[in-house]
Image (tube, rainbow, N blue to C red; front, top):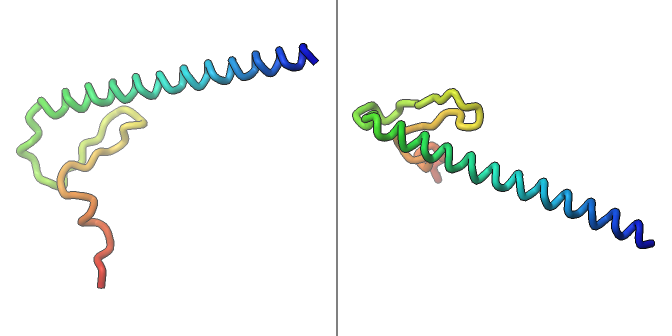
Length: 78
């Protein structure tokens, strides 16, 4: 019975470690995206049209729409 308990303790510690590393990776990637966004916003793109789409080479960043609020794209009440 003690071997079974030790096995499950080891398994849970390994799972906890993996989740911790994944969480830290997400926080690090968020900081990286924030730094990239700050670099792009400092380049002076502010004079562009409101419907401009900024496309990045990073796969998770995708496309960022600069301009109107997303509330304008929601269906209107009758």
